[in-house]
Image (tube, rainbow, N blue to C red; front, side):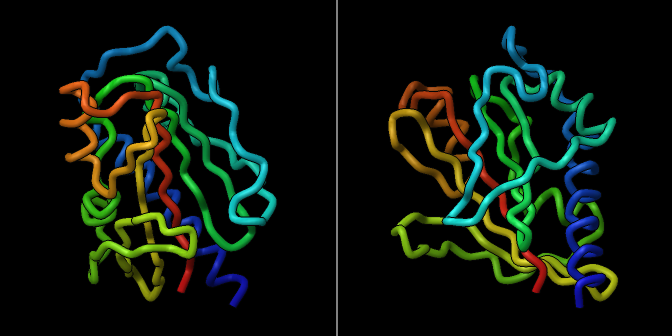
Length: 174
């Protein structure tokens, strides 16, 4: 079971890499758009300690153009991609699109509410016998939360939400 869990988390990392390559759209770059620059990452998530995971070379190139900062973290069960976003950008897109583009089968997309009464867009992804539960949400400095990047993008672009924004995507093996 442990090998399957590691394999599933590695698969998630590969999906993230594919998204980085696919999102080669030009973006406005903030002066501190380097990986890790300006962001203070959490040391725990939902009561579990977090440990940082290294960004791969492709992820680092993507992060260099991203208007904010990106970190990959793990709580031992889930892989968490945490992005601090400083400006509206199309480089932040739905995780389900990334998974589909990487060859994963995506099913069961729905909005779920967690124990802290926060809304998340969640789905299951399956590839080569690996199954993951993936959830995402975006929260602005103004407290406004979004469960999909498109509604966030337009609200941010039109000044209806203010950043910096925290975009969190979790992936957990099933």
